[in-house]
Structures are given as C-alpha cells and as structure tokens.
Amino acid sequence: MRPDRPKGVAMGAHRYPGLVAGTMLATAALFTTLLVGVAPPSSAQEQVTVPTTPGETVTVTWEGTVLPGANPSSECGQPTDVGSDTHEVELVVPDGAYGQVTVLATATVSYDGPNDLIVTIILPDGSRVSGDSGFVDADESTSVSNPEAGAYQVVACMFAGATPQDYTGTLTLEAGELPAPAPEACAPPGKPLEFAEPSYVDMNRAGGEPSVQTHPDGTLLYAAHAGTTHFFAPEVADEDSTAFAENYRGQVYAWVSDDGGENWQFVDRTLPPDGVAGSGFSDPDFAIDAAGNVYLSEINLVNVAASKSTDSGHSYQLQNLFAQTLTDRQWTTAGPENVLFIVGNASAGGTFPTDPVGNNGHTIYRSTDGGQTFSEGVADPGGLGDIKFDDGSGALYEAHLSGGALRMAAFRDALASDVSTALTPELNTIAEGVDMLSHWPAIDVDAEGNVYITWDEGGDGARAAGIWYSYSADGGRTWATPVRVDEDDRTDIWPWIAVGDPGRVAVSWFGNDTELPGHDAEQAGPDDPWNVYAAQTLTGLGCRESESAGFRVTQATPEPFHVGTVCQGGTICQAQLVDRRLGDYFTIDVDIDGAMVSAYSDTRQGGAVALPAFLEQTGGPSFHRGRPIGVPPNGPPGDR
Image (spheres, helix red, strand yellow):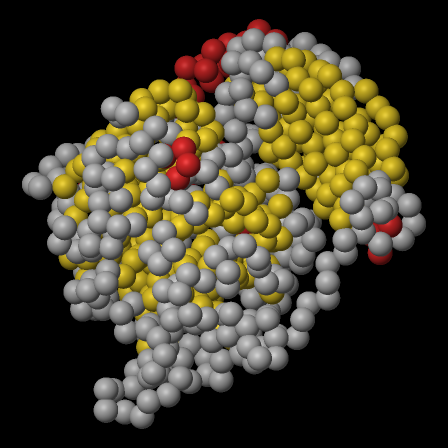
C-alpha cells in the first residue's frame, strides 16, 4: 500500500490517507465546506535567471498563508483545492545554458504548525510535480531538472488542516556539472534467460504486491496483500471475485514451497501458533536472520505487526501486534540471531511498549529480541524503500531521495549498543537529477559486501525514462556511473533487484508494449498490455574494459499478465476507476540453485483482485558460478 501520489512526487515517508488521518480529514473537510467560494490568497510574481556556472545557486524566498482544507489527491491546483497560496516566478534560461550545466529547481515550503501541507510546481506547459512526503509539521519539497523558460507557479496547499498555516517558500536553482558521457558497457551474457510457464501460487486468495524470498535451506517463502485496498471496482460483480471475499481474515497471506515452487502450502496464521486474526492486510515483507529465523511484517490501518518463524516459514508466532503504531509502509531486514531492523512512516506513532507515540515522518527502529520489543524511534528523513543488512561488515543500508538526489544511507555501526549511534547514517550520492517514476528504488547486498541498486526514471530529470542501475564496491561510499538497463522507450515501471554471487545481478520490471503519455501507467489504454521483463548481467561490478555492467534483457512472461491502467497514486485510484489490483511493487530473488524467481500479481483470470503468480528461471546463465541453469549434476561445468 502507498499514499495517494501522482507521477513526479518526491518520495520520503509514505502517508496512508485512511483511518490514521481520519479525524484530521473530517475536520478539514468541514472547513473546506465553509470556505467554498473564498478566493485563494493573491499571487506574487518575479523574474529569475537560472545559474550557468557549476556550483552557483540562486534562491527566491517568500512568505504565504494556506487556508484550512483537505486535498487527498496529494497535488495542489486541483478543482477541489481550496485555500491554496500561489507564488509565480518567470524563469529566464540563457541560450545554451544546458550545454554548460545541469540545473535542479527545488521548491520547498517550510512551516511549524498542526497541519499537513503539499507543495506543487506547475510548469509552463501545465504539467505538475508535487511533494507530499511528510506528515503533520513536516516541510515539503519537489524538484524539476533543467527547467525550461517560462512562467512557473509554486503552490502550497493543505493535504489536511483545520487552521490557517503560515509558511516560508523557497525556490532554489542549483547549477551542477554536466554528466560524463556514458562509458562503453561490458559485454552482456552470451545467452538469454529462459523461464518456465508462469503458475499461480493460489487460485483462491488475493495476491497484490507479493514478496518472494529464498531461505538458506532452500525453502521458498511467498506472501501477498489480502486485497482489502487492492481491488478494481468495475470487476467486483465478476464471478471470479470470490478470492477477495471468501478467504479474508485480516492478514496478509503466506505460503511456503519445499520443492522449488512446484507446489505451495498455505500457512494459516489464524490458527496456533500465531492464532491472531486481524494483524494486518497489506505490505508483506520478509526478513531472515543469521540463525535462519524468518520474520513476516504486515500493516493494518493503525498498526504494523511482526511475526516470527523458527521452522523456515512453515508456521509463525506473533511477536508484537504493535511493532509500529499509526505507521505506513514498513520495510525490514535482519542481522545476527534475533536482531531485526524496521523502518516506517509514522503519523504521530511509534512502537509498543517502548516508544508508543510522537514519531512523525520516516523513522527507524531496532529489535534485539526477535521482534518482541523495539528501540526508541530514530528520525530518518529522506529514507525510502527496502533496507538490507550486510552480515560481513555489520552495516545497514537504505536508499534516500531528497531534492532529486538519490543517496545511499549506510548505518556503519548498526549493532552498536547506543541506538542513536547505531541508527545514524552516513550518506553518499548515487545520482543527481533523479526523477523517480514509481515508488522507490530496490537494493541488494552480496556476500562480499558489494551494494547494488536499481530505480526507474520518468524522463524529466537528468536521465532518459527507463530502468537504471548502479553499484558500489566499497560499502556504498562511491558509486559507478548509472547505466540504463532497458533497451527502448516503451514505458517500464517498478524495478526490483536480486544478486547471486558477486557481480551476478538480476533486474526485473513491468513493461508496457507502448510508450505511454508521460510514461504514466495510469494513462494506459484498455488494450495496452504489461509483461514481466528480466535483465541479467554477469559483470555487475564492471569488467576489465569498463565499470559499466552489460545487461541482456528477456521478456519473462509469454503473454501479458495484465492489460490497461496500473495505479500509481495510492488509494485514490479506487475513486478514479484506475486499476489498483497489482498494488505498488513486485519482487524477485535468486533461489538456492542460482535461478531467478519472481512473485508478481496476475489479473488474467478477471475479478476484482489479482492472484499471486510465480515465475522461475529454467535456462540461461546461473546467478551462481559453476553450472548453467538446467544442466544436470553430471553435465559440463561452465559460467555461461
């Protein structure tokens, strides 16, 4: 699950506009009703010239007031937007400026008060980018790279607020060096990946935003969203919608496979030893500690629950129903035995009983007793996406995005006794001018401590739209020049990454057959199909000739698993009749035999919810050195 957010919105903490903010929204809605017909504050206008020398910065500052209201679209300037405040800027771009520098234009609204604001930049062509990553009393920012000349509007409005809110607005134009030309890539793998016919994990239960992970003993773990907020209203009456209703227990669904995905066993957590229904329904995430204990986390509207398995995911014991409270979109990773890290986006929440209230924005916690209790929350602004722990160095990693800069946060002393020391990150830049198209990047760490990342771009930043990749061979301190993974201009979204042996990397994504307007998946037509694509590199850490990995791309699904729109804006898609059955992401992993496996959502059967689908590599280079996939044990060895 994720917050309502149109394409181009800067990401950070991810709000769920449901029961968590219900009281504030209801109050704000009353003010909205009372204020209908009230003109917004008057606009101001000034002229600014973009800088043309690397390192030069130009900043415009103004004061304004936003009137009470509610705007759950997470974008200012909508017809329902009441009481917004607008500042107009005429941007001058000298001839040839972008042949000398790159310029990042960042709009920020800073304020102190009991409200929740949004900031939107309206470009000369009428398009918008918005920032809505924080919660109450949290500043908001959004950026545009290499802005064209013309009239811009920086608009501040309420996501939800019951009192007038004064704010300080800034528009900062920062000039940077032109990116270096892309290096010649290493040679791609000699053979393409091959995949078995896709299969369903379960035909009777929903399967949005699924997660797959390989246990060290070879067991495959699979979990999926229960469908509560991942339904498509026009299909509710379809006879194939029974998966949504018949098996719902208020929990995410979990399965295990002991035979490499040939057969799946449903893990009923409403029975002992877990025995608690209603612990969550969304955002399933696995973590496995060094002792082989499996942790499954899930969210409800008011809580994040953590469960633990000591038998490779065949059964679970609920550890803490309130591992986080009033929090959205958690991610977890595990370290030594019983050490569990968890991040989330708190809305005045925390974790019970240690730190029950008061955290806002992206927050990180640590448990040293297998998820029964957690440390006090440590603010982690800018963090987003999955987190990974490196057993070798004891470092914890998380991607950060702020002002168009994609960075890696390295918590070098993640096991330190003092939690504030343990959870204080070192930030290093991966790429500037990032225009994240989807929700978050995906990261992985190999057995030698190399760190890998993939993300998608919408084309309004410093890179072309598509799937991008980088790596670090020194623990996230320095990063290789980003390289594009996909091969054409068709719309590609939601990349995920998995690493086998060092340098053997899989990147997978959902790809449409066409280039959609603005690369916006919500603009897909009723005949626009989506397939799973997979790319492999055996030179993920570079080669003798180049630091740039060489990828070979394969269409992994033989036929489209979904046709039409894909929600990118959260729960508001339900009201807009945009298809939300797929959730917000899908995942891949490398199994014990060195094959790529994928968990994704499939809507081919029809009905109001997607079903959990599984895809397994059967041929092509292995992600473990020594023997190609599909070659019997007495067959010839080889890497390709």
